[in-house]
Image (cartoon, rainbow, N blue to C red; front, side):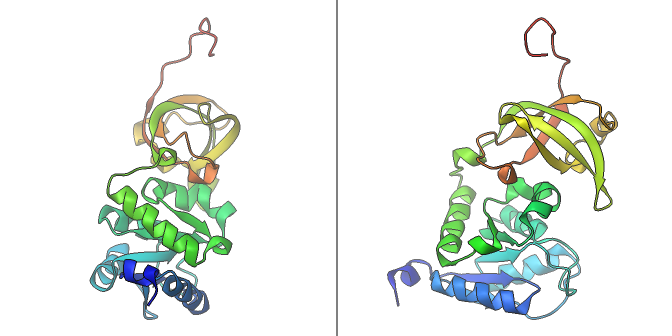
Length: 235
């Protein structure tokens, strides 16, 4: 038994609707010094059912994002990782569809997803590091890139994606020249009524503006911002 194995005596659940990819991830988890737990091929109707199984059988999880292709579950891995986060169970999210999913189905839960790996980044080293990062955040040691602060968010458009409303926005304190897309459902309903196509609305929100990539940004605690003063140079 290696030093890593002695240090990491934990069982990690492997959540993936693709048996082949699940087995590959299990090998990576084992190489990282953990004991993998492969879930049986069954259907989970809601996230709480799967959370209960993981709580009973493991102390952490590595979850694929898209779980519905083979009928494994009718929810996303991002929702599962967020639910495990609330229970202080460290979990890493994996996606093969980074560009398509991060703006919507992942962003919706991003504030409770400390580590997101693309499929090509998923290996023993990154899994071990990811579990450690999650555990540290759950213990209150939040890295600067994950800390949020109240800042202006300029919403410039509202659109439809996957039959749900999404907005395009700029966060000047992060990058004033790069738009970011996120689900309109993150905004309180009373403010959502103000959103119109191609009309700019200024809101305050708590955003982790030190994030290095747009994929890592999360948004919460929205409130209406005052109109800019044309004389203050910020309009």
